[in-house]
Amino acid sequence: MIILLDLDDTLYPERQYIYQGFKEVARYIREKYGLDEQKSYRRLISVFKSGSKLVFDDFLRSVGINLSSSDLVDVYRKAPRSLTNYPDVADALKIVGGHRHKRLLITNGRAEVQKQKVEHLELAKYFDELFILDEYGKEYWKPSTLIFRIIKQKYGDGLINYAFVGNGEEDFQFSQSLGIKFIYIERRNQIRKLQLEQTPDKTDIYKIRNLYDLVKMISMTTDLSSS
Image 1 (cartoon, rainbow, N blue to C red):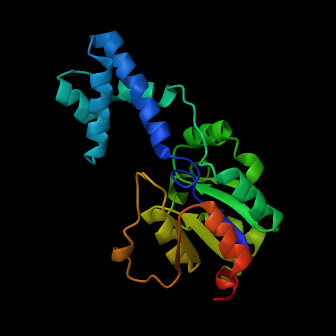
Image 2: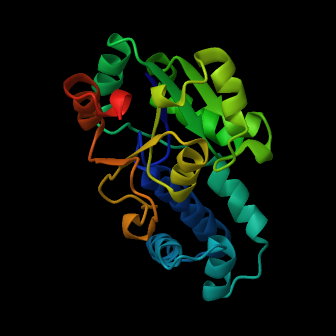
Image 3: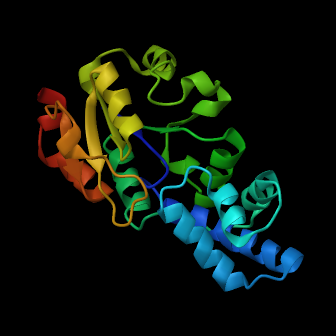
């Protein structure tokens, strides 16, 4: 089989990346404006959890600072980070590869950011190929299926042999558009969660809690290859 896997909140907790960036922003605000660092940090998290699409703009407005949010975005992106994979990732992906299944990473996001994450997490050794979609162009970002033209040339076009492991709406839409099986991984404290009750067709949706469940699905059942 060819197993496609998402990155953020599938292989590592995305909150690590976001919250560590917020800490650096809060430190910058303290140094530049004298605001309490912990209060700024908590405020950033609060704005983020509110569902804001413009976290730094809304944060600056809430604390009364007249500053371009682009300054904070720059600080956020350059913040030093220490990221760790979910504890099941290394062992499970080794087992999947040992069973001769192909493992392909497919991720949205700015190319330089996603490449840094992959390097910090040392993920390349667990995959047969990495597809950082921004390197091909924004039009390749999921749920676009443009990348599949490249994948099927290398790994075959038999859709029954493919499955996608992810957690977001764009992952589900990508799988649904192609007609391949979607494996929804529901991690604790995920930022984005697929609302399964709102998906019209659940025929090809499988739900797992971790990648060991994926190993079990592959090695102990024939669901993924015979349905």
